[in-house]
Every structure is written in structure tokens, then in C-alpha cells.
Amino acid sequence: MQECIKYLQSGCVILFIENAVYNAKIGTVSSLLESLPSEVNVYALHQDMQARGVLEEDCYPFVKFIDYEGFVDLVEKNNPVRSWT
Image 1: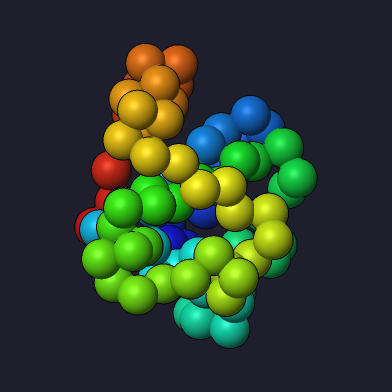
Image 2 (image 1 turned 90 degrees about the horizontal axis):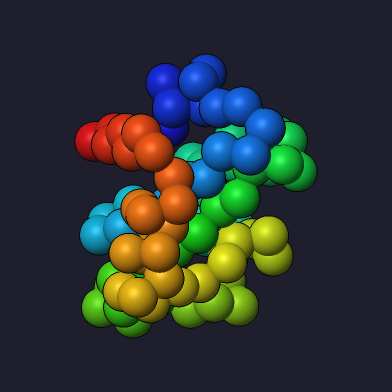
């Protein structure tokens, strides 16, 4: 997460998928998210959250929740796409 944040600019998008959805939870190591500029949009894939028992109410209020269709829309609108593991 620290490496990813170094490259963020205004208008960037972060999308948490698979196990990364845990980063959307308040109080996790993702407290780095609290320091993000408001111009950075943060999303989490709802289906992956459900699969891992992550509840929306346990997440930072600025995280937006999307489905697979929203995932595809984000990829289409945001190029290039970079993945961190």
C-alpha cells in the first residue's frame, strides 16, 4: 500500500479486490488511506467483501462499493491500470 500511495495523483482511483478489500476496513493497516487527498477515489469490490465477511459499515466512509459492472467501468475509464500485490 505504501508503494502504491507514492504514485497517486489527483484524480487517481484505487480499487480493492480479492483480499485487498480488508484494507477498506477502519483500523486496519490501511490507516494510510486516511491521509489520501480527497481527489483520490477509493473503491472496493462488493462481491469480494461479501465473500470475506467485510461489512460496509466497518469501512472508511469515503470508500465506494461497486459490483463487477462497476469494476469494468473503472478499468475502461482509467488507463493505464496498475496492479500491486
